[in-house]
Image 1 (tube, one colour):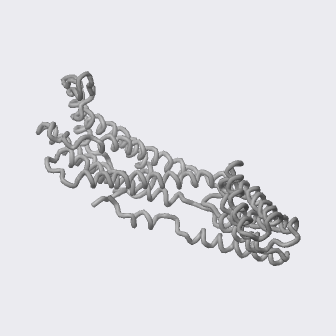
Image 2 (cartoon, rainbow, N blue to C red):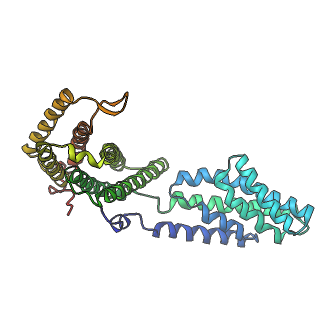
Amino acid sequence: MLPLKHYTKFIKKPGSRLIKTAIAVFVTSFICLLLGLPAIFAVITAIVTIEPSTQDSIRKGMERFPASAIGAALAAISVYFFGQSATSYTLAAILTIFLCEKFKLRAGTLVATLTAVAMIPDLHDHLIYSFFSRLGTTSIGLVVSTSVNLFILPANYLDTIKKRNHLHVAEINRLLTRLLDTATSRNQTGMRHFEHSSYTLLKRHLEKTEQLLAFQRKELRFHRFKMKKFRMFIKERRTTDYLQRILLHLGNLHYLSPSVSSTLTYYEQTLLKRSQKEFHYLMTHIGKPIIPSFFETIDELNNHLKYEFIHTKPTTITEGDHHQLSEKIIIFYELLSIHDVLEDLYYHLSSDHSNGGNKGALITSS
């Protein structure tokens, strides 16, 4: 399985978000100090409002404003009745959290609670003035950070997504190779643990790519974009969908019993080893013509699957309980299913190379 460093070097560097946070904090504090308002609450709001996408900033900002109003109001009420005491801190914090959850303002719970407890030491006689002052500074932080997120260094995850998808192909190649090694090996000591950790890691990596695609989709709604960028997003979205489908079939192979290798005939083991080599070659030579031996092996898999369907009887698990598909049938069926999706993915990715791209292999796994 590919080390984590292969992924982290493609993840969007923290520089852009760090720069946006610095700009938001500077502008927010400058405006507050210029107006003679306390900057601390505005700065806190500005920091937490910088989100991975503009849509998230706007949506969560719309939750954080009323949540902050609730926190400020509860802080003022608590001080009015109990003064600056432990009871005031406790009530302000607990009631703020409770009401934010009640009104489904979860994105604003943290900011509202911090606002509530941080206000208490500064509240004296002018409670209403303090309430509107904190609400005003919170509004400044929200507006500034959302504007910075919208207009300065807008998020672009497309290159990262494309590189991650290429790495996913290499991961799938390695995992499928090891799964077929396990199925054809009599000695499986330690291999099941390797496959489980590799399969889990692959799922996690694909979920991260799905998350980046979701961020990018939201970002495209708020910026004018060239058709080329939109087409690239659609292409990577479809690529990830293909990879998710392959992952489902790999999961079915992954959870087969290790004892399945003892049920395979010599011919079936040989056929699986040939299939392993053909799948490996295909995934390491995207952009090059598919060799005839690949289709010959797939035809042989298909014919053997038909034979197994006709001649294999249901497997008896317990009395009155039968499995209609033997594990051997599942292996050949899942391999053919992977082939169907993989061939679609092959032609989908090959379009990059046929349009003037690199004519070499897309991924080279070692």
